[in-house]
Image 1 (tube, rainbow, N blue to C red):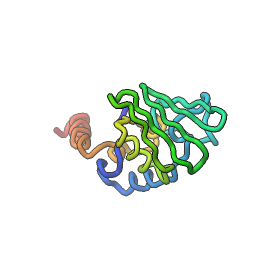
Image 2 (image 1 turned 90 degrees about the vertical axis):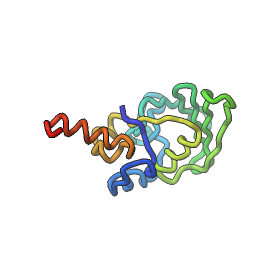
Image 3 (image 1 turned 180 degrees about the horizontal axis):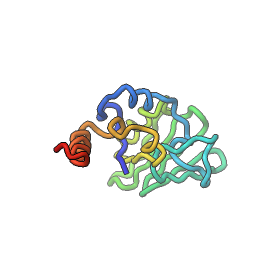
Image 4 (image 1 turned 30 degrees about the vertical axis):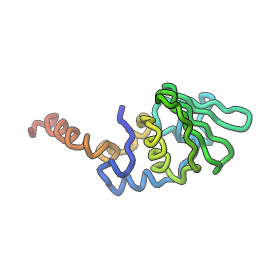
Length: 144
């Protein structure tokens, strides 16, 4: 499982920039009622959504992310924080904006297996983990 990082904390590859600049769609967060929304692959690990009357609520580890009408502000509630504050953000234009919003609320995201399989690992890890990744790779091929 690989922790999600914004472009700022990444290795800053062009591939990762292109990936993060894709338009954000609600179905990218996770499955909704155990199904893909508009055939969109979930990008984040184990977020479960429920479609309610006029909104969609995702939950994981005492965190709620609520989406209302498309392009309306959305809400993040982190019950793990002492204050249990609710944060409202404009609907994210791209994946990186969504990741940055979650970072502001101390919400830790992990990439889904789909993202790990379809991207080069060195592009989706943090700059801090890149050195460890390269050292482990060198050990595996006997060059260290």
